[in-house]
Every structure is written in C-alpha cells, then in structure tokens.
Image 1 (cartoon, rainbow, N blue to C red):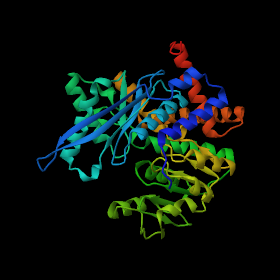
Image 2: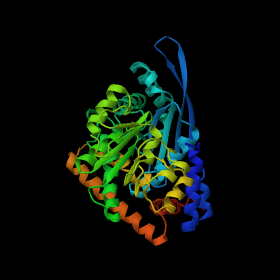
Image 3: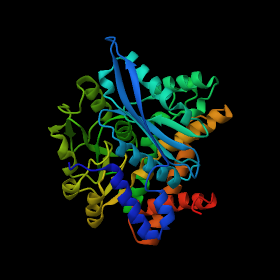
Image 4: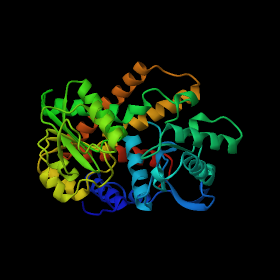
Length: 414
C-alpha cells in the first residue's frame, strides 16, 4: 500500500469538484484549510508514577451549516493531515445527508491497547480539559471514532460538565444509553451503509445470490457483515490487518467475530481458507466493502479488484489515483460521505433527543435513518447523471453546493 497524504487527497477531490460545478474561487479558497486547528499536549500520570505527555488535535473545518461535528480517534498513527482531512470529509458528509451540522474531527496519538483503564480515563478527561472551551452543543460536538467508544464518551461528557458546572448531554454523542445516548447508535454506521448497499444492488440489477467481501472487521465491519447475513446475502471474504478468511459457501460473521475475540484476528479461522490480508482485495466478490483505515486501497490494489460495486464503510479508503482506475473499470463506488453517514445521522438524532429530553424507540430511529439514506442516495444519483460523473463526484457536487450556499447566505465571501 503506497503512502498517501489524506488532506492532499481531500483537496484533490475538492479541485475536481471545483472544475465540475464551476465553484467560485473565493469559496474554494475558504475550503483549502480548516477554520481552526488546535494542537494540544495532554499530560497523564501513568500507573508507574511517571508523567507521559500525549499530543492531541481538534480540526474545526467548516460550520456554515451548523456546529462542527466529528469523532475523536485514539490511534498511534494519528497525524495532523489525517485529522484535517477527516474534518473536511465530515463537512461534506453532514451536508450530503442534509442535516444542520458542519464538520470537525479530533485525534490523540496513542495506542490505547497499551494503557490501563485508569490511564485511558485520565487521557480522555485530559483531552477534554485541553479543548473544552471550543466545545458545546451549539459549537462543536465530538463523537466516537477509531478505538473510542461509549464509555470514553461518558468520561468526556462528565469532564465537560464538571468544567461547565451544568448538565449538557448534547455536547457529545455516542454516549451510553444511561447518559442520554441514542438507540441504534452502536450500529448506525453499518445500518446506514446497508441501506445504500441495497439501493446500489437495485441500480445494478443484482440479486441475493451475490458474494460480498469485507476488508476490516472492527465495529462497523462486523455489524455490516451481520446485517448482510440477516438479510440473506452471502459474505465470502472477511479480513483484518493480520489476515483474511475466505469461504465461497459463505462465512458466519458471528462465528468469525467469536474467533477474533479469542485470537485477536480473523486469521486462521477454522471455517474458511486462511490467506494473507492483502489478498482480500483480489477475491472474486461482487461487492467489496472497505471498512479499515483511509488510503487502504491504492493503485495496485485497484487493478486487482474484481467487484462490480464498492461500499466505502471506512473514511477515504480509496486513493484518488485508485479511484480513477476503478471508474475506468466501471466499478460503482458508493462514496464514504454517503455510505458511512449513518453514524453522524444518528448522532444528530441523539442531539435532538438530548435537546428535547425525549427518547425514541429503535424502530422509529431506523425508519428515520432509512428515509434519509435512501433519499440522499437518489439525490446523489441524480447529480451523478446530471454531470455525467461518478457517484463520488455526484455526492461532492451536492454537498459542496449546500455548504457554499450557506456561506453565501452568511455573506462570508464578500
């Protein structure tokens, strides 16, 4: 996998949209950097009594359509450019599903697996202490991301409320249900992707007898596999960073998940053929679902892909160069800013419920989510047809037009 700069990739995509829709130079200039970027140092007293300092980031890319919104990831490979890129993609994501939010992102350079529970809690609280003046339900609303979860969101909300001296459940989403979290949020990203998957299957005239491959078997990937199985689709390939399991008759996602919990990987799963991780992309599947980290599909990978459709469950999994190869091959790519927007959509529902102090049932949330995802898919398809372009560019044209209109309405380009 070739090394890429995520923010440079995001800007390449923006440049392409600029040429398609004739985006004004003033607006384009405003999009070339986040409105605000914060780098902080977070001291944590470790269990051995020594103090270790961690570097954290928060990128607030654009809030023309509403408060900044975006997750916080804890990962040893977090970079400034990654966080900036993710905040840009989040801006387009909230716009493409037409919810009243902007885009932001946060990250801390850390391998959370190396921390004790106490150290992890202190890091989580320290991050909020470092940036809390720039947060709030009408300013910037964080959420979970890679290696963060409802428990961490609960710690972060508690720290924020201590600093503010008041209850403010809407300042963060992805919280435990006991603290004002929303039903469905745990699997919302996968559920939203599943709705776009079904719309894509209809457009291509495919049936239930197709083979599906999933690259990445974390929270989103595992939930997606289970949703597909429950709906009668066959998942034949599942991979993670350590290996790939393949069974042309179909894999049982629940059994694979159990194996991964016991061994730390899908590798050596007894119910499938065991091959190296990179070969996941070479498998003969009809639909490929990248659910790992950004930039995981490069030029050489794209040449090997045999799938008719790709659902980007991960953020930015396909490099711009690889994207062109896939477009030339006629592969239908459902872009990340639509495919994985289920998470932020249900996060928005969580904010609404927090504001009302009234909480919806699971069926009601699923109904609202499906309507938004299906409507957004069809709007993007119309834009794709209008501009004679890809689904990705259709999504970007729709999203960037909406953000641009909000900026003009505010007089931000005068």
